[in-house]
Figure (cartoon, rainbow, N blue to C red):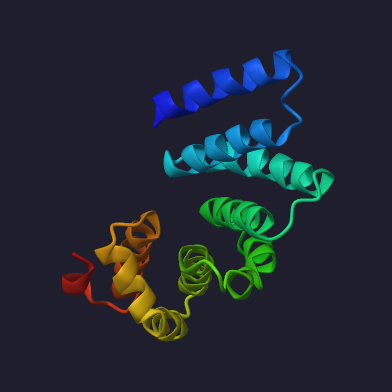
Length: 168
């Protein structure tokens, strides 16, 4: 992960030196870096970069999939540093906007489940997670990144309800 972040930072420096940092290509490099920062546990850095990317997405007039993807990424980064209200506000509606992309919809819904868990609503979180059963199963079976996230959130839900056996 650190290697990937390093490579992406070098790409972004190169983009900047060539005046390409404010292009869609430069934005994509930044998105990938923010995603890798979050995956590597560097959530505070991911929050800063994803906030910058959200602003750039407005300047590029990005909508649809790209705008939703950066909103979900920024929301997940906010969640990782326990800024629950901001994450919840940002993620509101992202799952509904992702009707064409079950994986993106699942990422947003899983973040909502995790917000509920952090607020102590284990029952509501379990109900919301169970409602995603078929999509979760497909993501896990398909070895999708959101399937890994789903397994982590399922374990958190199991732990919150006191089921340590299922959490293993």
